[in-house]
Image (tube, rainbow, N blue to C red):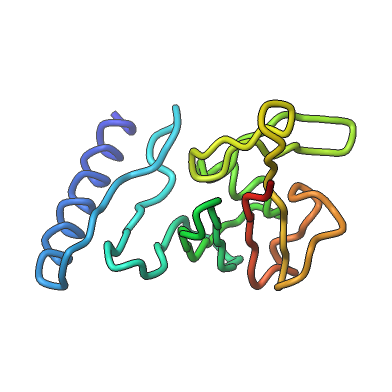
Length: 151
């Protein structure tokens, strides 16, 4: 019964959001979630503005800059303690565990694999090249986080 109630409430909220956005211009809306149901509502402005994603006590800007110079920009809100956890939970990054922490291979669905084509995702925190991995960056310390596809 609880899952049904939650699903109905989530569906109503998404419908209300869709109706309200219809009057504000061209936007797309989706629900992001996992096995436990939706974790956030994603609102994307098709004019290249920042996408609001997640909810929680920490907020930081997240940018993915691709090889062609284009980028995706997000404002992330989360209760996760580390940026790596937050971005993984929201589906913005994927990677493999290594002795040095998370080796990020996908950002916003785009694969970078040094072993295949000598590309990798470089991490910048607060405008500076990060000296630690994304799973060591504290959300409380991050104002802006960027992954740049580098070759």
